Image 1 (cartoon, rainbow, N blue to C red):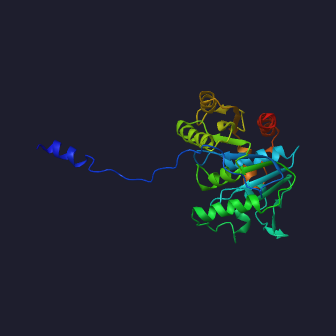
Image 2 (image 1 turned 180 degrees about the vertical axis):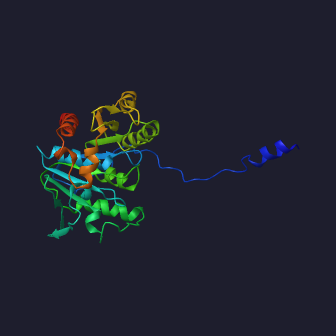
Image 3 (image 1 turned 90 degrees about the horizontal axis):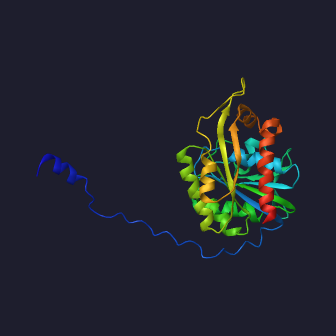
Length: 288
């Protein structure tokens, strides 16, 4: 055997890797929770990967909807709860009344519940396995007072893990999923997995939002496509799901988020973009 042949044989497969067989797709929607009630519309905000601005989108969407509706926000990212920071309520703590959890009320008209309100401080890590994360999300849904809520916005961690699965099983009547994605190919590939998750769980895809769709220079107003642009709209068209709109990168979004104020409260331009997206969402959900 030559030297090259010996090197090639060294890397030939010598066996098969065994993995657990994934469960088959649901044939029908699961039984809904009887405790999660008095909420008219539930919308799940998901992304295929991290770093696409999903939490920022969820918070600004909730604040925009709260101008005309009663809105609740569940921060379902148990390991990385950021929504209280974005809403400026990091010092608040949850309490109960008549064995029900009372969501935190914000100055922006949004009631929010998050794992962050149960931690000693912002630096504390949540090191929980899936079963505990499932139970926490279940309590946020079933044990909190959500009476007279028109829209419940649920902000999930990246991917299609335990938290999203918990909600899809407890709230199969959810109005749908909004996929937040950035324009580059890798993010679009992961976003398709989130869409596939929704399809397997028999949950409607309300639409796709292209976030970080170009950078708007604060000095000259010129737009620069850092991560490309238009990829999300093309993907939505190919998959047959609605495209809800594009949100460019504005310096104000970063600055206001760090200060606990949603950008839609500061910038007329950003507010107009979110109002257009929220109108499309309401039209789709109310029509259904």
